[in-house]
Image (cartoon, rainbow, N blue to C red; front, side):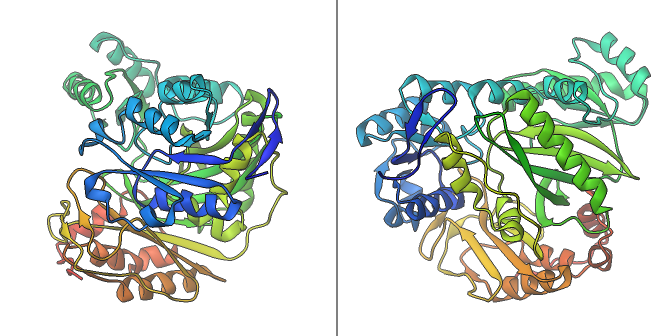
Length: 461
């Protein structure tokens, strides 16, 4: 037998050859997981990614027609065609692109392949944030005050009176903070509603929005869930993801500093229980906001997270391998205890002053090789950083017996990472890691904006 073969709740499945419908660091990460499980890996690539290191590390590689995402990594027909040509028996979507597309997941299944992720019904149900909030709240997950879908300005005004100000207008079908509009008073509501609907329609093809209470300085805490196809679910503790810029995460860690661990464990356990009750399967992440001892569910991400490595380092559980094993109908791993502290920093190709993406050829690209440090990247020296895709160059994950040791190792790793050809946000990451509030664990989602408002120049490294 090649790879995992298990009896699922419905039918036995063998996963022996995986098409990886993605690129960059996550494509390379999935290749590694497949190699370790003895599974054949198939990667796809555009001309921009032809020099990526995972092209040679995978078992097979197929060139994509087109360059822009819509013509390549989002082209479902082309991806399914390569799956047929390569005789793959399953598809791993990674994160981003088609990872949370219920339509793509169903097409994969209809083609007789295994989709390595949750059942398409969960991609659809959890993809609608209003529906997800309702489902979780009905089963005891706390949420902050919010509305159903808003149909017009009159409905928005009525909902706003019940919620109170400040509030935020949020797209129901999107993510990453795109389209969100914070509203301080009633007379600004209608214009914010119009703007949020327009951005949501353009970005996600879905202009539906809802209102939610605005929490000015919250912590962003998420819980990693694993669920099998036999009605069981478990949590792998929490990740602290509050260090963000423009609602995009920059630094993540586990465990969360400065919050009562027992309260977090209780919420994680409740989240896992709800997922089991619902019959959710495979991996998922419950995202919440935490403020002044209160917590509110935001959404559920039905895919592997960018920051999954943080959890892997403190639990010893390989989440990508677990995705594959669970998709084959396997059972959950044994419960584990937290060990040490891990912190991840996201190294982006961007101008250190304007914070806009930086493109070019990586004349030098030398990740550090240090004890207690893991680097996840889809790039290597000589490769082009293109404007067509996400600007994430690498994820640096540092592990220590204490939070202080993990932070120190992350700082050393950033300083030892040699990159020439593009600018990076290393200076900003170092500024945050050395910030006195961050070192105390006094974190919230607005801290990066406050650091940038000091006017101190961010050094280009």
